Amino acid sequence: MHDTLAHIPKMTGYAHSACDHAFLKGYRDEGALAISPAGFPIALRHSAIGALTDPSTTRQLETESLRQQGIADGPIYELFSRSMLFSNAGLHKKRRGPISRTFAFKLMEGMRSEVSRLAGEIVTSAKGCGEFDFLDAFAGEIPARIIAQILGLPESEMPRFRTLVYSVTRAFKVGFDLSQRAEIERDFEVLIDEVDRLIEEGKRHERDDFLSRLVVDAQERFEVSLEDIRWQVITLIIGGSDTTRLALCSTLALLLSHPDQWQAFCRDPEGLKKQVVQEGLRYEPPIASFSRVALQDIALEGHVLPAGSPVSVCLASAMRDERVYADPFKFDIFRDDHTRWHPAFGAGEHRCVGEALARAELEECLAAIARLAPETTLVQAPVVRGLNGIRRIDQMRVVMN
Ligand code: HEM
Image (cartoon, rainbow, N blue to C red; front, side):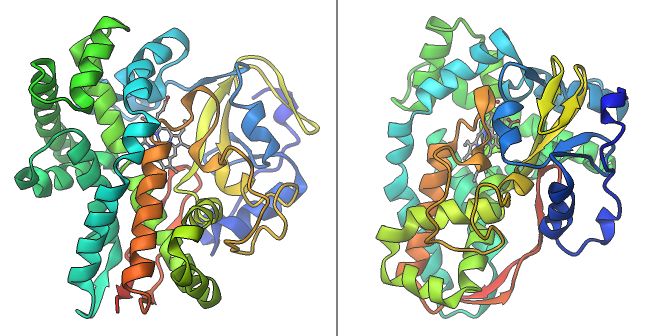
């Protein structure tokens, strides 16, 4: 590695750390960069987010790391080679363009009443029925059902769709378990058939919905093939599932472990739902970090990241940066120092295309719980862990009353 990285501290002892945030803080205090347990430079301060998502960096091609794991074909490989998430420059614009036009703010805002109805239904059936796993029974249901509705999937196919979604999502986790490859790829093939069928229906204009508009827009305006649309739709399905599921759990758990703030929220769910989600995403972001490659030498608060170096931008650390947030280890839904663009959704050309939907889902679900089940109690808080990509979460047990 270039000698400009020689004096950067190496992170050690991560596996034994009780809390990601305390671990990260130690290194963030020392400097803007460290060498992560995986051996790459990791940028720890808030200022790095803008600096490392401008045109001085590019998106790493994840197909290289897949090849190193022996995956050089099949649907996982295809997804990583065709998805907007791992594309750059003109190709990225072409792949993202039709989705960002069609998956528009207005359409997603329109989903609020449906999210609220669905959340109300789950709360009503769980209320008074004793302890249950919120991760599975509530948080896992919402993103899968809502995206299925947006894609025009009939109600009867929802349970099977949900199982497929969380199965294929495993391929997006950094260093996923290779022994699961065959099973994930089998489910991928079924999901691909499902998505292709829905796109075909959209092409025949059988409905006036998101997919029909996407097909027209993609083909007429961006000259994108139907096969390409398939991979972007699958990216949407995967990108919005684990992330939103995790944020729902962690934000509710944080609220329930701060009774004063939970009670304040229950008194005014409509007025406080936006602030609650802002703070939940800052305190425990679903995506801990994302990677880029430096296209030129980049100066970062006293360090130089050499051209060609991969770098991980650590959102989990940046959103606890004392230089930006007052008392950052305090969960406070009333804080007024959130930045205009929330870092949890990334920055630059790859900034999350599903932000409006994610916010609608999180705000409406949490408001529904506060309104309908203010006596909810936390039996087992979830543990959120991970420094790379989408973080892991285990079960979360609650009683709703
Ligand atoms: C709380 C929930 C969510 C969080 C925290 C989140 C976070 C992020 C972040 C940080 C990125 C940028 C990754 C990078 O630069 O490498 C991203 C990209 C993306 N997200 Fe989300 N996301 C969420 C929900 C959603 C939803 C609901 C959808 C769609 C249904 C979605 C679809 C996408 C897509 C397609 C991209 C790739 C954009 C591109 O490469 O141009 N996300 N998300």
